[in-house]
Image 1 (cartoon, rainbow, N blue to C red):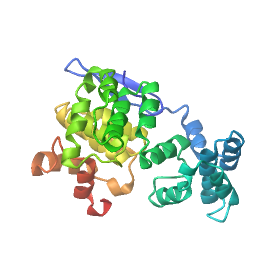
Image 2 (image 1 turned 120 degrees about the horizontal axis):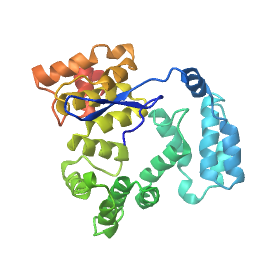
Image 3 (image 1 turned 90 degrees about the vertical axis):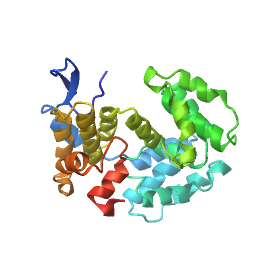
Amino acid sequence: MYRQYCVGGIDKILSNKDKYLPKLVQSNTDEKKSDSSKTQKKNFEKLGGDAFTAGDFPQATFWFFQQRKYVKGGQMYRKVEISNRSCEDKWKDFIPFLDKKHKEGMIKQSTSWYEVQTMWQRNQKEFEKLAVASFDSKDFPQATFWFFQHRMYNLDGKPYDKVKFANSRCKEGWKDFSSFLNQKPEKGILNKNTSWFEIQSLWLQKQKHFEELGGICFDAGDYPQATFWFLQHQLNNLDGQPYANVDIAHGKCGEDWQGFPIFIINQAHIDGSIDLSTTWSEVQGLWDPKLV
C-alpha cells in the first residue's frame, strides 16, 4: 500500500511498464480547513497542568517549558522548575537538555511529547525502552535498531537475542537489516546519538527505496530533501520517466531552491558527482556549502 503523502491521497497511474506509480494530488475542498488547522496553537499550560495532575511530571515539565518559550517569550515561569523538581532523580538534567535541544532547533512549537521523550531516552541510552515501544506498535525494523543500540552501548556488544528476534518479525525487505547494522559501527556511521530516521534513510537508500524515503521526508515537511529522493527514484528506478512527485515536492520548496531538480540531473548525468550512494548532506554541500 502506498503512503498518503499529502492531503487528498494518491492517484495511481499505469505506466508503459505495466507498473503502478503513485501520483501526489492536492485536495481543493479541504485546503482552507487544512490551512486553518495548522494555525491552531497548542494550549501548553493546559497540557502541562493535565500532565502534572496525572503525576506525569516529566511531560508537565516539557509543556510548561513550551509555555515559557513560545507564550511568555522566555520569561521566568516557575512551573517549569516546580514540575522538574517533582520528577525522579534521573530527570534532574531535563531542563538543560530541553534548552540545548531548543537552541539546536530540535524542539519547536509543534514538537510533540513523544518526540521529546524519544530524544531524551536516546540521550540517556534508554534504548531498550524505545525498542519495546516500537515492538509493541509492530514497528519491527525500528525495534531491531533500538535493541541493537542497547546491545552495543548498554551491554558492551554482548550477544542479545532480541536483535535477531525483532529482525525476524520484519517484512521480507528488511531480512538483512541486523547484518547491515553490524557493519555500520566499523565505518563510524552509527553511534549512540544516531536517530532512527538517520539509519532508516541509510537502509532505504541502500535498498534503492528512494520513493519511500522521499515520502517520509515529504510527510515531515522537508520538501527539498523529498525532491532529491524523488529525483533519485525517477533517475534510477524509473529510467528517467516523468514522475509527478518531483514537481509537487519541488513546488513546495522556497525560492532558495529554484533550479534544484535541473542541478541534480546535471550532477548525476553530466558531472557524475551524484550516484546511488550520495547522501542528502552531500547534496546539500554541493548545492550550497553553507547548509552543512
